Image (cartoon, rainbow, N blue to C red):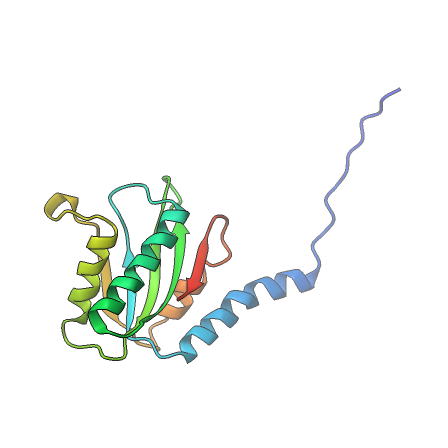
Amino acid sequence: MLRNTCTLPLPKQKEERIVKPAIPAAYATWLNSLPWGFYCTFTTRYQMSIHSARRSMDRLQSLLECQYLEKPTIFWAAEPFDTKYGCHLHALIEIKSKTKKTIIHIKDAWQIVSKGKGLKEYNNTTIKPYNRFKGGHFYVSKYLFRFNAEYNLL
């Protein structure tokens, strides 16, 4: 004879609730301890997958390395969109030999690696000088542990 049984989920332990929010905060603190020059958001007009985001950031680093003759430090996080497929990227970038035109160089490099074609086919970028007191490190780190998110330090 089959009986209907009802199983209730076990209550979460207090330690889990304390530990999980502390991990992104620890990443944010660590990121803020490193020297960064720029806070960036990169998007594309097409649906960029997580794997495509990883390849794009690897290519971005390679292209910037060729331009500046030094390997830039990049911490990036690919964040899935809430309402549509694909993802966009947030990044912290440090280039030791930066100039006044470095922001333009990063934007141009993103257009090359993401295959932006200009005008209506331009892939959007937002690049700002990094200010350690404005919370860019928290914004990048808060999406690290979301479902389908990806991140790396290059």
